[in-house]
Image 1 (spheres, one colour):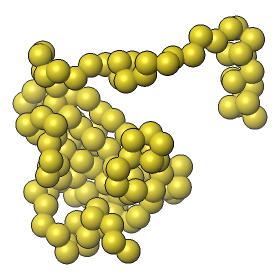
Image 2: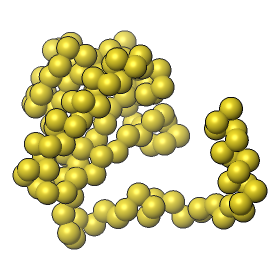
Image 3: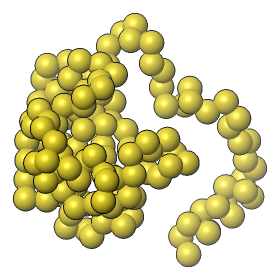
Image 4: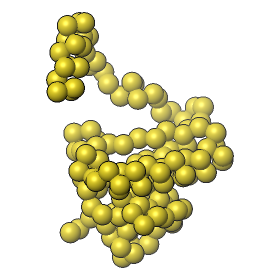
Length: 135
């Protein structure tokens, strides 16, 4: 497999490791959007979060919380983002969580600013979506 994150997890590519658990790894992003931009990945290869077993998902987000606390102590604001699949903007098909320090005037907007064509749903449409998700 030619996955850069698998190579980092296996020690074949160096990375600036922040924290590590048995199942997950946190490191500084090599192409940061802000100073301190970090990534947290599962050590095993999964393309989407829903493919991960519950214990590995728990481990991943436990490490996300630990790294977020460390970054928050330095910056006091951060963005946590997951692009779950190519259509959502995931560029490397290996689950990864971005922790990006934010500051006033950094030029990035809220997640809502990413969507120009937002739907206007009726109550009936909301209810239909809810029913489909719950089934």
